[in-house]
Length: 324
Image 1 (tube, rainbow, N blue to C red):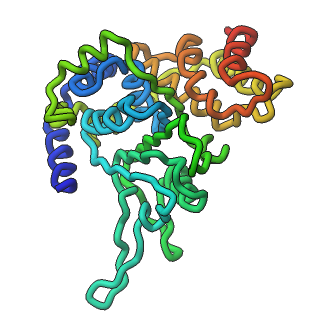
Image 2: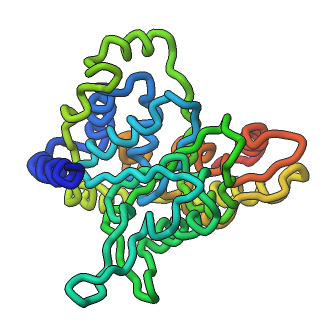
């Protein structure tokens, strides 16, 4: 049934690939569609859209019941792409994710795992052991998996939305820095405000389950997303802005209370996110404002600090690094 549902979502998406008139219109339409099932999380919707346009993966951290899974499913509907959910547990193995070789009619054939989807929800990713996390790492970075020495390409587009619960401390395997560095953004999701919670209670439900997920209109589809990404890639990046990005990243490595600063990959991710943010804001050139808006979400999860917090470090570098 899930495969049939994914196929129907893709077919509906193809019928609506030209629904938006501009990327700014797409941003507003995406928030309207997600509000059918999730309210009070407009900023997270924008960031997930930016990540999809920038070819980036997202880590969502939040308490139970803060709509992490529902938000991910809603965004998959908006993108009009195939969706798979992987529920991570301590006994999840790499083959549960990437697939395995099986024998059919006397021949060895590859049976793909749930990682073969356009949008993959890695639910509670920190509950699985390092060996399984390493399999996810290859998929996220290389966009292929290796089984019995053979590489298998993942679908394009390919977006991983991973979730973790910051209040769970037993039976977890914290993500290593090398894997955290593969995430474009870390979004810290919290409960919505009181008015939004009242609005949430008034949404149609079947018992405790949301009743409007299937009513979310797909706005992009694979061809539409490719077209939008081409527009993002053509965004103008003035050299002074690029030097500002480098200044921010290098400053994280110089502060005495930072044991591990941001990598060069972080600088690439800031620029990619700033391009997408500029386009959905109606501009063809990135600005200092785009960089400052995206930098906290790109850098926060990459820093290892002592005697302070990552947010305090980010506040300091944004205040002290001169902008062009």
